[in-house]
Image (cartoon, rainbow, N blue to C red; front, side):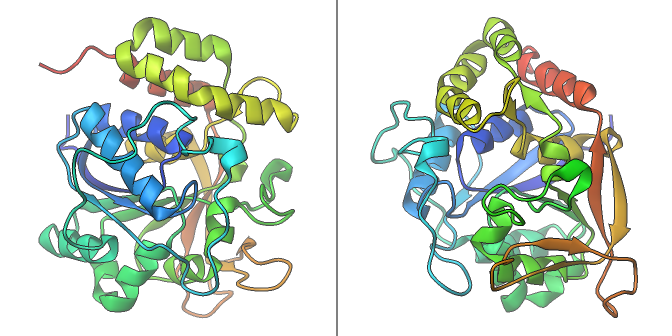
Length: 318
């Protein structure tokens, strides 16, 4: 097998974030180098505590750097406790204070240092608001030319009618800091967007999750436990057949992009007004020199779910 891709995971754990982190950390095609935290599914203190808890519980020997506590402009929105629970991890028992501490650097400077230390090798998988990436670009714009790839879970482009999930037009990660997304999507780095267009085409139901419990050991049981609140939310909003696979779809893209088909073109983000957070892709050249990005439009859901199960339930490496 080729050398694994070096990954920094930018996240706001979060139930689906935790599921994606376990997937990422066990995939032999990927090498996790660090975790950066964002606010979103909880305030920054809670998401950082959760990241430290996940790192320590599952033996992930990587630094956790705490990120921004507010968007580039405006006030932070309230965490969606009705989706992820009061502690953002499905209200399982999580210690109020972590046994370990975050990295000395804030997330955006940690990103800058890691990218400079591993030129053309780092893939950033960003499954939260994009504030940390935007702050890193503002401070060190040259990092755009030093990153191997950025994979973003966010946005919605209307494929198969998948538009917004927090407003009729906006997906949560983009709506939480639309200016950051506009800046990140305009930077000259290789970028792929895994939005609701594909994440809402893939669902995990109880039968699938029971299979993870049976064959996935502690991690499978943990996923079942944290996902009860998440599953109940989906039932409450009329989603039949399980819950959507958001953040793990971005990890799957980093492992095997052939799971997806995509369209290429520049992407802009509406930054204010009733359509704030709306993501729009146009033809190459439509917005001057703004770079084309890959927007995923279709996914082989059966292969993606099989990949997740295979990775999660594989015996531990010797």
